[in-house]
Image (tube, rainbow, N blue to C red; front, side, top):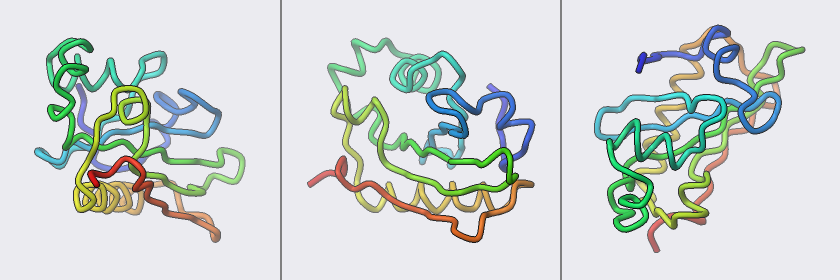
Length: 140
């Protein structure tokens, strides 16, 4: 897997629009502080289990703590205006369907890494840029 250090149009053109036009799904591996784009046509859980953890979806289902430090974000890009409209960190099918939970401080760290990834990139932030964190799937 190629490592991406910043948000670029090439990255968006290769991986954007996975679930909805304008959306770029990424996951942050907090152990390595690496951000990975989720490939088109691949579900978060399959990507996280097989590509990042090297296990099956069943193994992840049996031990969700294995993915505790892998945190998702959705970057929303307006391709017409050429701007990043927002980012949402902390929720994907891994959290919803597999009940993976994250520490609140880990979600915040991942969010900060994604914000840096965006700010270092070539796609500017929109005037109304919104950065949000979903704490619904944090460890209670």
